[in-house]
Structures are given as structure tokens and as C-alpha cells.
Amino acid sequence: MFDTKEEKVKMEAVITRFNDEMKKVRTGRAHPDMLSGIKVEAYGQFMPLNQVANVTISDATMLLVTPFDPANIGNISSAIRADSTLGLNPSDDGRVVRVPIPPLTEERRREIVKTASEKVEAAKISIRNVREDARKDIKEAKLPEDATKRAEKEIDDLTKEYTDRIDAAFKEKEAEIMKI
Image (tube, rainbow, N blue to C red; front, side):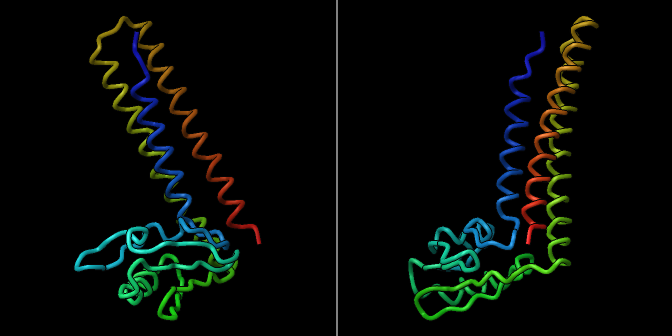
């Protein structure tokens, strides 16, 4: 009998990674995870923003970034401004960086959905790669023919289940992005 526990763990990891990527996608509302991919040059090296500052929500359209060391405030503003995928223009007052979240235009919403759909395809490719690895393992196990077919069907069902979960999460995110 072929055990699919390892494949489930790998596919679950893909789902987790995908959900983390979807949190970073901008929806028109302020969310601290929007800035989670930002790297700031501090102390001579690049560090994740959350290691040099605290990111909070002021209101639905404003993020506040409070640096742990005020000397890094200029680098934090520059790093946020440099990430063109976000399209944000931060301002600082010497103590905190204010990041206004501008309302999204219809065109920008469509661009964001397109970018998110590329992440969907990447996640599905990862799921299919897990399936192909499992099929190789099944062939190498030299199981009887009926056990091989049963194991392949089990892997295919697992693949469908996880790709459906990715599609459902994307539909939900797409609706959130397109909502005005």
C-alpha cells in the first residue's frame, strides 16, 4: 500500500506558502502584511522590515511604520518607495513613516488580479510537481498493478483537492480586490 502522508505534507506547505503570498497582495485596504516583502538597508545589511520597525494600521487607508531606531527612518521610506509593485508613496515626520494606501483604479485592480493569478499558477505547478514525484515513487515501489492504479488515483484526487483549494482562495481574493 502506498502512503500519501508525505505528499499531503508537501501540498499543505504549498497551500501555506500560497496563502502567505496572497496576504501580500494589495486589496485597497491597509494591511501590515502588504509590507512584509520589503527589505531595508540597516546597519550595513538588508533586513526584513519587521526586524527594523513595527507596522500598524492607523485606519483603513493608512499604515504607520514605527522604526525601532529612528536613524533608519530614511532607509525605511526609501525601501517602501522603491518597491514599484506596491505603488506606495510614504512620508515621514522624523519619528514614524506614514504610508497612505491610495484607492485602486479599475485598471490597477485588474493588474493586481493578473499578478495574483500568476501566483496561483506557480502554486498549481508546485502541486503538480509533488504529484509527479509521487508517481515516480509509485513506479519505483513496483506495486501490483491494481495497487499502482489505486495509489495513482489517490494522488490524482489529492492533487485535485489541493488545486481546488488554491482556486477557491484565489476567487475569494479576486472578489476582495475587485470590491470597491
